[in-house]
Image (tube, rainbow, N blue to C red; front, side, top):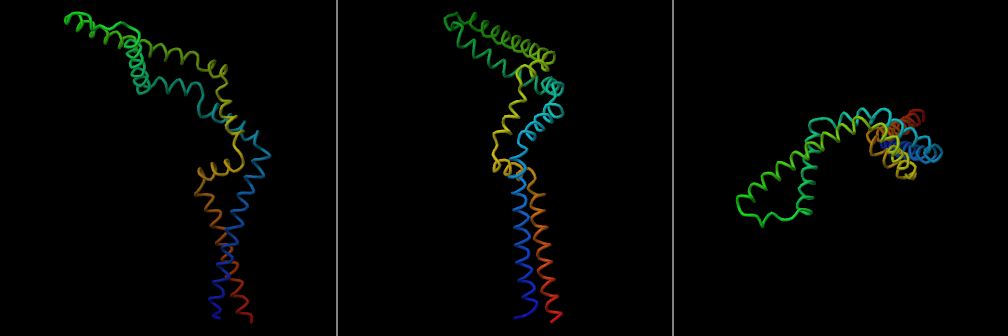
Amino acid sequence: MNPLLIAVIHGAVGFAIGAGTNDLAIKWIFHAIFAKKKREIAESVRDVISTELMTPDKVASQLATPESMDALKAMFEKHVSDVCARDLPSIDILPRPLKDYAIAIGREMRRVIANRFTLECRDFTRNNIAELISKTRIWDVVYESVIRLDDKEMEMLTRRVANRELRGVTFLGGVIGFAVGFSESLLIWLLT
């Protein structure tokens, strides 16, 4: 058989072995480390989210943006309209001029109520978000979510986030395996 073909075959086998062993090593890391360090990982994730990513100040600031205020106002206005439509008597029994007047007043009242409620919610959130987060222990949701993940789910989640980098590690193992297999065959061929 052609020595160069043998070297390529050895390189291909080396590539498969290198890539396979690196992939197995990544899987082992998830299963060994995550199983042993699950609580510490959950605590770290919770702490990073609560102290770095979503601090009370950041949450309050986001809720106070014009976009958030507009969204809240629209939601409150719809809710007030739904409550009024459900809980107030129908204005259909009124004569036409009074009915039009009642509709206009109702619309304006819903707008005023929604606007006031939006401002009150913003102020309440700004003044009480830290205590609200503390008393509700909202960040424990993050901790409990990580604790509930099994090794396989954690591996899939991490692979989804760092897929390109982990594929690079696997591919690098394959390249190294190819180089070893190919060069070994060439050395044997040259020395014989």
